[in-house]
Image 1: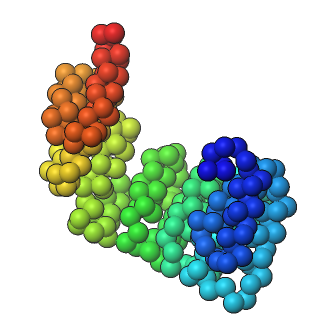
Image 2: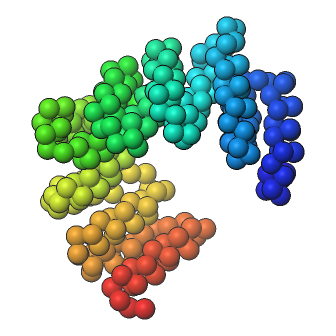
Image 3: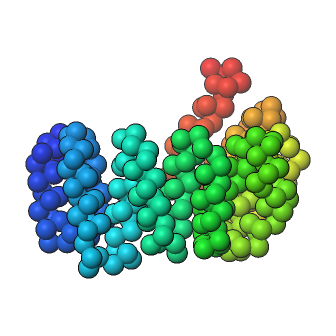
Amino acid sequence: MEEECGNQEICLDILQKGLKFNKFNENLFVKAIKTEERLGNIEGVRLMIKAIQADKAANIDKVWRLLLEGALFEGRCGNHKEAREQFGSLLKRASSYGPVFLEASKYEERENDIDRAIYFCEEGLEYNVKYNPLWFQYLRLYEKADDQTRTQRFDKLNFIVSDMFQHVGKEFHWKVHVELAQTFDRLGNDAKTQEHLRCAIMDCPESIKWKIWLVASRVMQSQGAMDEARLCIERACLEVPSKQVSYCLLEYAKYFETVGEI
């Protein structure tokens, strides 16, 4: 409430009192860091992180998310050397946690160091081969890499796709199909795009099928197939739960705006 009212100092005081009783509480800690950051108290954040790092009784299972937030904070501050040092230290202690490798890879991607981003993603998959978001990150890095990097650092795309389906649980194959459809769309392979869209619609749970129809509509629009895009939106409108109809209608309105039917 205090945060919503703009009382950042009072909000921080409440969070700090809470952390005295549970210093490893992730929600309190992250919120306190964000509040200190908004107040411009950079050194205050660093003291919080150093206290966690110096606590020899702190089990990595309890504090890895807190230390990860510290590395991300240094990155947001532009302190790239310290951010990388903290990521490196954390990765040595928490190699079994896929999110750490994922965030390290995304950080390097934001810094336009694709080679390092690929390195952390590949290393993360070695330790956490069934962590789905790392596979999706790997696919995005393949797409983002230039031809030379693809040749030097990646297997052929069909081998990457095969590995994804081998290691990602069958219950999440529909998500893989969605990611692949969007990737092939951006790569300009319309046939593969439509193939994976069909598979995603067939494999996904009934409760979210309407979302896949919306994804299909956007893909069809990007391919210039406006009639098919409209049919996909209308199918989504038929299958969407009543509480979320407005979401589909908004997409429908955007469609008409795109085709010039204002």
